[in-house]
Image 1 (cartoon, helix red, strand yellow):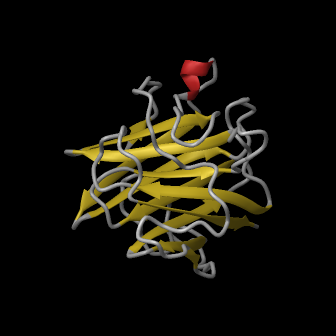
Image 2 (image 1 turned 120 degrees about the horizontal axis):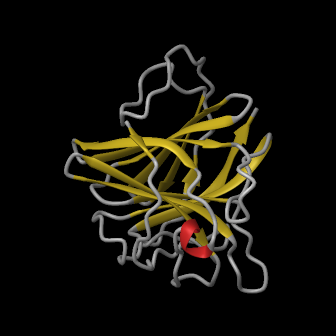
Length: 208
């Protein structure tokens, strides 16, 4: 388990924005979303990169081509606890509430990967058009609001778990709200954050 440490990473070219809801994946197929499941939370949450039975109360799968991106989450009065996983050995990322207005994305992004035995996760903000930079919140004058995180890569799968306030109050974070929350996701088979995603999609998750 790791506490979040603010860090500036290189400007990255992950194109998580300006994608229509009917966008195709890199292999020409249309991304799909499964119906969410809502198991009971019976296991204490731990940021260890292991998704235990009963650790989360909701799960949803998003598929693009041969790639499936899974999100698991639960909330309490203050925090959201999230696990994101995909069958890749590189980066995985989720973006909250993409706002495609006037060529701006204004998207709250969480970008992570595992290198060796160490997990990395960055609180970022995509503020310009697709293909341009999404710097760390701290580089823009904001705050790294990832309270706790951890992850692991095993069997060709990457898992990142994190904890964050539902509403951080940071201008470079969007709040997680009760009801539908729009998201986008992306993955790549390497941890090189300068590489454009190999699969992506968009959808929504529901918080009770």
